[in-house]
Image (cartoon, rainbow, N blue to C red):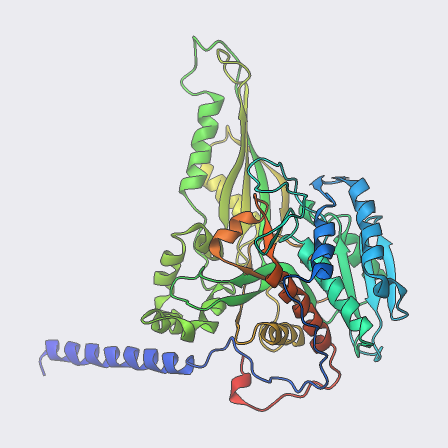
Length: 510
């Protein structure tokens, strides 16, 4: 047989093999991994009361919370007057919680709050639900309503904290209040931790709570904090909304670039000025992005969990990332949101230089913020930055850094399953998948108490809504706020069931 025929036969055989593998993978992933049906036998779940958009009792509680300006400006600089007011607000708004003999309450670091809800079986490992009461500053310019007004308009509650994160604080406590009013007694002990300085790192609030629990020799089954959300329309080719459970979060590296040069008159400038040197350094690190890391974190799991839900031909592509990963990674990096999933991101956030229009700037400084992909470390990013700049005149110093958190168990962990079940109990038919939380949360402070750290807010967002976080016109719909309460109402019951019994079914595969 001529050599060219051998080559054709070999090529045909390899093509057939590739097509067979693609077909098998596509068929194998045809049943959504992101949907769980009756994974556990659950007995006697209480039903949350019906709430409508005119239910002033539930709405007014969140509105009151939003009107209290619990702003964190920087480390150790926050509105302590407002935070003391928030403590009084909690006591007044949730009388059943504060009077229940099942609940132990204490303040931590003056302004944070820790609730322990005692379970009937004290031998079981407790879990923790976290939120934070502080918010970022908000200037009134550009807002439809003042940022601390809690205005109710068109079915939405407006104000700083409606998304980040007072809806979690109030929704969680409202759910517990409703359960206790119904005579609920949990089988399993759990904690509710409300930090007061998450927006500036949580070093006083959440870290102090974690230290306190550690000193008491408390280990946790899992932690659920804010983070990922329900996203609709944000993933090309996916028509359904998806609830993303953050199973890890990016690390952060903050560096300062500084160039020192002799001052002088602008009429006799040197070939390169401090501003020019620094500008070129900044330009280089923006142009030479950090390497692609697609497939080395849970971003691959996110797409594979959803593979069967993508329209043709994306469904085939997502089912066969072993082959199409480079193509998908290049596609994702084209948008800021997609790029944040596949690499460590680079953001130049500050640039300071100059003292007078006719004086050469003696010093030029820039601040650069990197959000680190789980497959990298802060030291690796710093070394890459030094290599990219390659200019000894640019002094590089680290302002702060935190490593990406380990990837928590996916699919088989009781915490992940309980969160998934609560999502689907609250939002019937909802797709659920693991993913990366690109923002920083308080979960990092609890990593010594458990390996199961999850991040999810039952907030329904379209891509345009993402600009409202830390932006103007932050708001949540009344309907979504009610769903928020129902989610926590369901989760507290599901997470504490004492007779979890696996149902043997192919649909139970996560």
